[in-house]
Structure formats: C-alpha cells, structure tokens
Image 1: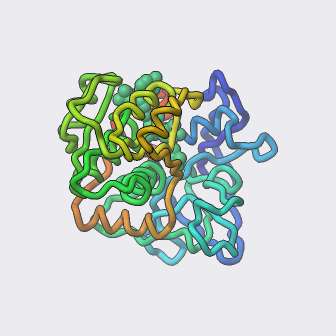
Image 2: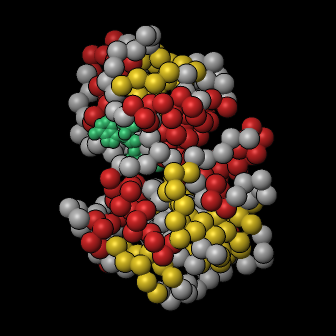
Length: 322
Ligand SMILES: NC(=O)c1ccc[n+]([C@@H]2O[C@H](COP(=O)([O-])OP(=O)(O)OC[C@H]3O[C@@H](n4cnc5c(N)ncnc54)[C@H](OP(=O)(O)O)[C@@H]3O)[C@@H](O)[C@H]2O)c1
C-alpha cells in the first residue's frame, strides 16, 4: 500500500528523510480495527518526527500521520482518535504515562490503511467531509480542549490566540467564535490578520502589539517568540494555556508577574476520545467547519510538508486517497 514514512531523522533537513512509497499492509491485532484512510491532515508533529523528536531510531521506518478520517472494516465512516492509551487505562487518555500518539509507536495515518484500537474510532457525521473530519483529531481537538476544558474562561470572556495562521490557532478562532468568546489574535502577517478576522476573530494585532485591554486567557502555541507577550496580556488571575512552542521552547518567564498577578500556566496536550466526540457534535450543531488551506493527493505529500515547513499555511493541509 502507499505510505508516507520517516526513513531516518534529520534535525536540519527533515524533508531529506521523508519517503513516499510502498509499504506492507498492517496486521490487525484483537480489539483493533482496520481503517481505509480517505483523508489525513498534516501537523507539526509530523515534522518533529522527521527531525527525530519523539520518534526513536529503532522504530524506523515509521508511517507518519496522527490525523485521519476514513471507512472502517464494517463500512462505517469514522474519525480516528490519535491518542493510544494502555488497554487497562480508564481515566483521561492524555494523562496515561504510557500513552503514545499514532506514528510514535504504532504506524500512522499517511497510508492507504491505518490500524488502531477499535475504541479509538468516533463516528463521522455525513455533514462533515472526509477532508474536514481529518482535521479534527489533533489541531482541532487540541484547540477545543485548550479553550473549553483548560482555560477556565467562560463564553463572553476575551481570549487571545497567538500566531493566527497555525492549525491550532485557526481552530481556536473558529471554535471560540462559535462558542461565544471574544477572540483576539496576533500574527506577523497582515494577510493572515485579515483572514483571522474573516474567520471570526473580533480584532487582530501585530505580534507583540500592546492590546487595548487585558485578556482572561491566552492560547499559546508559538512559544519563545510570544511567551512574554502572553503573560503581559493576562488580567490578574488569568490563564495561559500552552500546547506548543513552534518558535522554541526555552522561553523566559517573569516569575514576579506569575505570583503577584496570580496567573495560571496550564499545559495541554491533544484531548480525550470523549472530547473528540463532543468536538464532532460541536461542529455538527454549530455548523463550524475546519479551515482547510489545501488538499493534495497523498502521493504529493512532499509538497504539503514543504508548505508546512515554510509556514506558508492558513489552516490545515490535507492529504487524500480515493
Ligand atoms: N500538545 C499538543 O497536543 C499539540 C497539538 C497540536 C499542535 N501542537 C503544537 O502546537 C504548535 C502549533 O502547531 P500548528 O500546527 O497549529 O501551527 P504552526 O504551523 O506551528 O504555526 C503556528 C503559528 O506560529 C506562528 N509563528 C511561528 N514562528 C513564529 C515566530 N518566530 N514568531 C512569531 N510567530 C511565529 C505563526 O503565526 P503567524 O505567521 O500568523 O505570525 C504560525 O501561524 C506546534 O509547535 C505543534 O507541535 C501541539
């Protein structure tokens, strides 16, 4: 079957170890299901894997991809939850110390078929296309959990989203708008600021700009480049939720600000299967749909990786199979 794999690791030139070619069909263990992949979305996670971050050398070659929507072996249209927890784990799957994401231990979704625990399948509603549904399990689920589970900010609150163009950021804008938040965003790029406002942001600011008021929560995925601004933007008692650090993770934190203003710094990763089910229903009932930057045949995956690496995206890059 066709698969997009990491054949090695390269911190400086991640695309040099990207391979698109034939791989054997995976076996299906008891309790697992085979899904014919119709669409799969790219994430920064796939680039990290090519750089050797979070993917051990003894697991190579590894099929990349966390996100997929497709058809299972019983003919049902499904969305795949990417967090694989221990079979005996009964709590929040993201808190299982042994949990992995697809493409870390188990083969990922950029292939004709992916094999996952049956409990990781969530029904896909007919109103969501495969391309839209494939965007939900990583970037959209992460944004959903950051805003609605972790931020503690109720609808009507003001939330700042850093780095308007990213997959998580565009999801946070769209979800925030539909859920009744006042969403402010930052971006270095004027065109992305304009698109963020079209998508539902109340106001868009240049990265690092002084804001008209303090915000209740910040959703942070940019990291080093915006961290200081995120802490300065918060009202006393406000919360910064952080799930990524694209520009670097060695940010300096002014601790005086954290304790004097009683700020909360909350880490967030992916989301539970139950949250994914709720997100799917949220999209169905509100009419909110993932922002798709581009759709490419899976055989042209390299082109999608080049776009992601260049930061030349607004929303998600999706790979499809017939
Ligand atoms: N923990 C989790 O479960 C989880 C899940 C999904 C993603 N993530 C992480 O979250 C991060 C975001 O991923 P993503 O796919 O949404 O988006 P992304 O492609 O990494 O882009 C995020 C945004 O970051 C901004 N940015 C990048 N470098 C910057 C810099 N030097 N200065 C200022 N802004 C900069 C850009 O905004 P502008 O161009 O608009 O300025 C860009 O649109 C990644 O690091 C990813 O690994 C984590």
